[in-house]
Length: 83
Image (tube, rainbow, N blue to C red):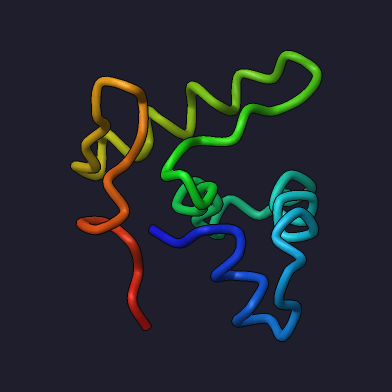
């Protein structure tokens, strides 16, 4: 699990987490694990336009064994990717 900010920093774009979100939302490649990128609070970021992507992301993560707390957050101290 990585945050949008981590991906932005690794891409040489520190502080541009939102751009990572825009890029992932435009993906048409099913081989990219977009569902493993979450916000810095450990939450799934809600999509605009009433997309069901939020539910799909949670389902995919749960299928991979990722746990959510009672507030719908993923404990980053357990699941955060550390390169």
